[in-house]
Image 1 (cartoon, helix red, strand yellow):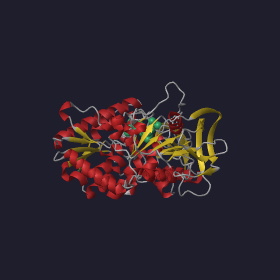
Image 2 (cartoon, protein in one colour; image 1 turned 120 degrees about the horizontal axis):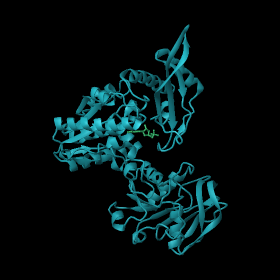
Image 3 (spheres, rainbow, N blue to C red; image 1 turned 90 degrees about the vertical axis):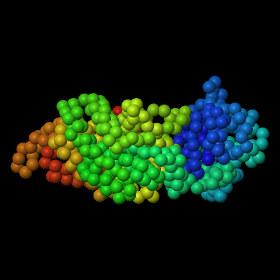
Length: 504
Ligand code: XMP
């Protein structure tokens, strides 16, 4: 594997992503991870990430003692390169101005750049620069502003780049990282087939003859996990899908049709009445969420007892939720209720989390190989509380039914116009606003539906999607024509922040 030591760069995760795209398994550890922790990953190479610090800062982060004495190749990126140079006796200085953005390498060569030809655009973001090389190193790339843009020491196999090879703005960065893998002698066999085989044997080893319980949400992660576990333990898996009545049009049938034929022992639980009763008259968003979380656990517990006993609880936890990195905290708590925390002691399961080392797109690739249909595999995220937080205020069967039809027209429309995959998430919202309209010769007084589509990388911030007017016009027509309870359609043009993606 390649171990990436994280010194706080916002791009650290991208380095891991790139290596994995190149077929090499790589893990991110905190910059200060002790040597024995690193050795547990059988590292064949180490990357020192970028970070906001200067090597002269009092609290400048550094690798633990012994790490740089390992006889394996090391690549320093940005701060990582400055650190390498500094600790080997070179000099680093605060440059007059911060270099930020694209820069052309005026010349390059050496092992990292082997086989790369033509212009090399490098993406820079630094204010410190290496000004004097440590002994044994040579400069292998330069830009106009930065004479020392890449360095190498062939003997000790220490390499450094001032730019960020992992970002898309460095188009040939992937080749450079591939060269580093070559230098490390990493076998590039981290393919989806390989991952599946490994996960299946890991799960079998962990679970043995035990019985496994899984909550299926209908999203890509839990569905894929269902398929993987079915392959690994067959009938020892019970996958529980709770229909809380807050699903989209046809969703329950789609999930059943996708998983059952592929051998997943799926139990669908109709809990619609309980959820509706518990949510009756509740209009506060947080209250709704809490009630749904509570009811979900209650229903899940009941099924666990009915079909149990189980030894293991499987969860679709992904790598971004568990990365022990300098900047990797937060973000995960939004989904707390879906992690089925808070189960009572007599339902104390051991956890199985086969996807703990995977990124979302790796899960999608595995899903493809395991036969999950594309409409589920490539689906936008859908929140655990479902349509309840898109039907503003107190919900009712009638309102949910209206929202379901609006949502279906919008989402089907996005697919039909080839716009779905370009959005990170799209949703319809039923507002409690009623307004006056005219339909035929009749005055109407009906609800306003809102459409929202966003693009985002991480759902922490988002931009509203610039959908074509023609498309929006078509959606508006279809919605008011087909859903008589709606006489006005608006499109949400607010980013996050200041708004959130969901309206509640
Ligand atoms: P917001 O609305 O906070 O949403 O911008 C960010 C992302 O999180 C999803 N979301 C949830 N997912 N349970 C979930 O499983 C929730 O309670 C919840 N609330 C928001 C939302 O759909 C978006 O993808």
